Length: 187
Image 1 (tube, rainbow, N blue to C red):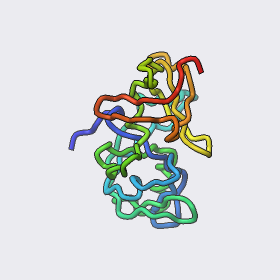
Image 2 (image 1 turned 120 degrees about the vertical axis):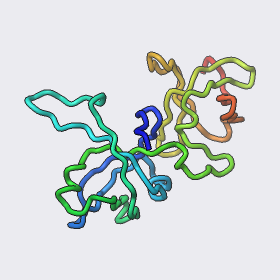
Image 3 (image 1 turned 30 degrees about the vertical axis):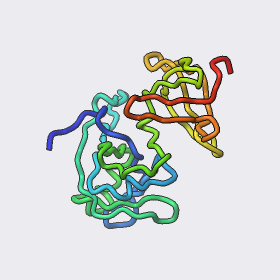
Image 4 (image 1 turned 180 degrees about the vertical axis):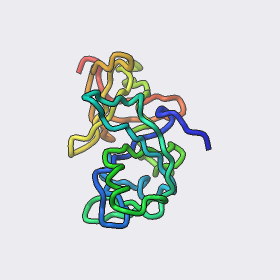
């Protein structure tokens, strides 16, 4: 299998620490429901070289390494993984800070009226009157519900924050990359 680019992979979390003596990894996930991470049979780790002589390592210097997942489970509110080839605590600690990535095709099928946030990024947003509201550049969660961040994809300048709730979101058409919102342009 050829190594994909970072643009072809979705980051699901990062290795926080070693867990136990047998090489298990404690993972800090980016999701409160890490179903994809728990069901993945293989993952890519983005390993950034350690800093040397005061020079910071850059993301461009990161290398991708494919690992087979032997086991992934929830333990005390965190994901613990065992990977093929990682057999002791020293090997696990050497991976601390590595980003965990998977291909988009590894995600389970979303339930109806549910969406993976990564699929919404890049969608154009329009209101019921057909006025353009902007492009989805990010999504976040405020604790009560999701929030769509609209703005300029190039500059990443934020134009609006809109609640991602059924009263506002009227339609999501992923095939046409279009979200219709009950929202006024001047709000």
